[in-house]
Length: 334
Image (tube, rainbow, N blue to C red; front, side, top):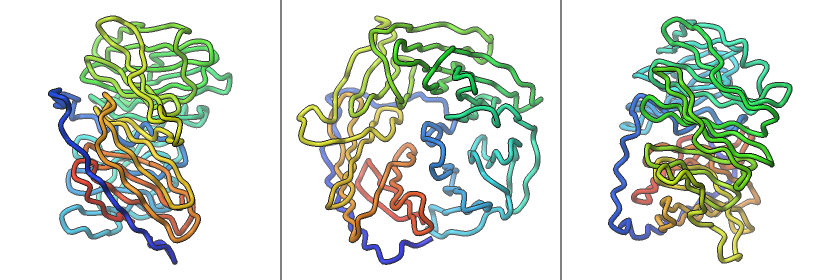
């Protein structure tokens, strides 16, 4: 899709890439494609493949091939796509509560997930042979369910009463779960191999309303408005790392966390302003997307090198721009 009558001009300032001597090498398990799963419902469904980005276009799946920069229909007539993921070399969709594996114009039913119909604020993750679903029940309770990709067998592995949100992040053989409400924050680690759950943090000292969430073996990172918080594994405490809006002159809203990077942005009369920092608060890039009309833009996804900005969200004239936060390059995917 093309944006009609919109002139997009992107100015990127690439800031110092040194990280105060800290190594940014991550051992995040490569068998999990987590990057788009922390974004909310009704956002564009995007999956990062080995040589393409796959995205939902109505009931079709289209592919943007990174080597040729060409777009083509990958599979037609998939149905309403509630989830689109890339896992273990293959494309998967969740359509009408059925998980499918999808290849070139072929979709193959894996198993049914009826629980998806009864949950809101859902998040899906594929990791270590599991399809994982989280969300809020009609009673307002947080639930996390795992489905074996081999057998389709389902198990509820976590529940929290009267929750406002539930977030997932797998790391190696641990599924980290963040949930809570206005009175409590709970962080747990569920071992996908042993089936054991450990409560890492449960307190009312630091609560979140609708956080982004990432975890590694050393720490977990959470957001609240424009601030980033860190759970330290050694001390078992949560403390603020930095705030995008500490100078009180801007109104950045965090739009995502991936490994060691945090994305935030805000819109004003001149366009959309994207800001990238590392989790220590060091500046990475500042990107201005100037629009010729008064059109909204939001962060809608990311991979290990790019952050994706959805221009004119929800419109048939919408477009997605990929900004490389390592070198400042950008391109319009569709």
